[in-house]
Every structure is written in structure tokens, then in C-alpha cells.
Length: 307
Image (tube, rainbow, N blue to C red; front, side, top):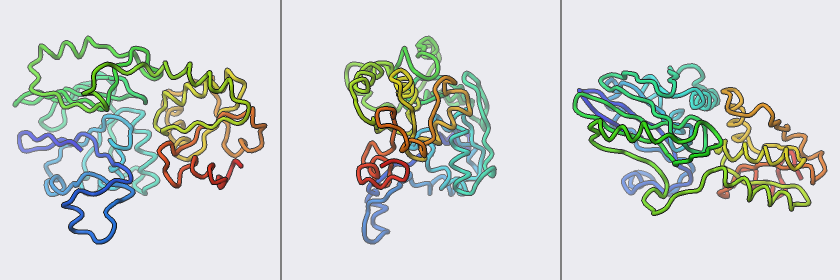
């Protein structure tokens, strides 16, 4: 939850959550008992007290740590939300489950567009990441300009969206940028990450060698990895299925917004248990050991669709 203030108004970029995380000492002081909670968001008290001055909320991309708190906190802000088509689809599905439905004004923005939100002018710059439509921004004001990124990975051969194009970012060097506020895991480490495409060959070899049912643990939001796995299923003569509601939800959103290839079918999870083991490549939620996720239920043999 990033806040920029200028000319008496505020702009919020992202409103995310983290999971199974301890609270900060200040918050712990007010709560008895356990201090570790399933879902934790940034403390919104500062901006909630100034909500009449909040010009808008911008969501950079559809990961939980960037949009997951909105269904919980939006009633405290009650301002417009700006984001791209795919992220808006993910967000609407979340809001409908939370009972907010169409109550939140979501304004869809195209990549490359420049818009005014209060005294802030925002330019939407496409970057590359593991899911569709991640964006960085140039935030321009009379006081100066800031370059703000979402999560990013310089990928010249991404599975979703266009390859990373360095030219628009190099041109920012001539535009009097005061600061870069960036967000990228391991960005301070030397070297570079390999392309998402590089995962294909290793996964393909593993599935080729497998004799029984194959189950892959994966982040539900990683559309790029899911597309790779669906291609591998097709090439190895297996049916591709999704075990876990969040996986089914994100692939549904990708289909609805044109990010899922038409030639990659997805089998209903209910039918997976009726197939021969060697005919199945399933993806399951719970790659970080979440107790209620599909992978943990499979390990206990309590998953409803597959034994």
C-alpha cells in the first residue's frame, strides 16, 4: 500500500495482503493471545482519516500482495479504482465473493495510456512478470516526477504479454525523474533470472518420465507457468486439470480476457478421478504448504475429486 501526496490530495498504489504473517509490535500490543494471523494487510488508519482527500486507488497487477486487501478495506476509502482489464476481472471475482459486487467503481485502463487522477498524471508502462498486464508508472506532478514499478522481471521471451521493451524506460533518463520506487524479489542480487520459457524443458522432461498421475504444485496466479503446463499436458497425451478454486478462478479470468490460448483445453476437476493415472496432469494449489489447499488434501487423501 503505497501513498503519494501532493496539493492536498493522495494517490494509493496497490492495497495488498500477506499470509500467515506476524503482526508488527505496535499492533500486537492491542491484541491478546496469538500474534500470527492468516491474512495481514497494511494499517490503513492514516489514509482512512483522510479518505475525502484520496483521489483514487491504482492496482498495478493481480497478485494478492497488491490487490488482496481491497475487498476488506475499500469501504474505508470509497474512491474509484483504476486498473487494466485482466486485473479488473480478478478483482471483480473477489469482490463478488465478498458481497461488494458492482459497488466499487472500477475504471479499466489500456497499456500506454496517460490519465489524470486528481493532481497526479499517470502513464501506464507495460513490464513483464508471471501474469498478464503488470505495469509500472510515471507519476507526474507539478512538484516532480516519480517512477513507480510493480513486481517486474526483465524477460525477453515471456509466456504472457509482449517481450520486455527497454526503450521507453531508457527514455525516462531524460525526463527529470526524482526517484524510482521499485518492487522486485532479489533485485539487489547480482546476475539475472532466466526466462519463464526456460521452465518448459525441465518440466517436459519430468512429465515424459512419469508413469502415473502427475500433480504439480503452483501459485494459482502464475498464468505463465499454467500455460506451459497445459502445453506439456497436450504434448504428452495427458488431460490438464486444475485442483483448487483459486486456480480455476485465475484461469477463468485469463480465458475471459483473452490471455488463455484457445487450443489448450482444461478438464473439469470432477472428471480427473475417473481417468487412468497416466492420462492426468493436474495442477494443485498449496505449493507453500497451506493447510487447506488442494496439495495438502491430496497428501492426506481427503481431496473431494481425486483419490
